Length: 135
Image (tube, rainbow, N blue to C red; front, side, top):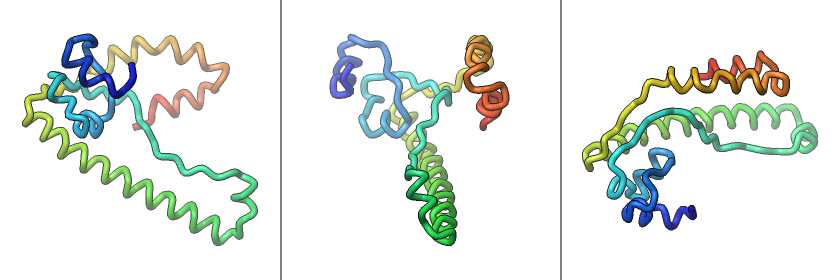
């Protein structure tokens, strides 16, 4: 469904739910038409800094270091800002009547366990373990 139709579809009960980050639920006022918000933490949407390897390697080493250090600094700032905003937005969503839950992830993790084996040959057991252990 097109995003522009989701609010009305929830309002008219054409759809039962939608999935979006807390900031989107807050800004789009989804709390007006959706009663529940489950904090599953099943997806992280990073902001990427991308550059061709050829271009990066053509830069002087000191500039490469500046770029890497700055990228880490920006990532740290962005993640802290995101956490801060999510805390505030969750409080406001609750105040506006949304029921916020944190489901037990163990059942979901158990249900997904067979998928790890399926992709082990493609990505390697070590990479899958890193993904599973990411916090």
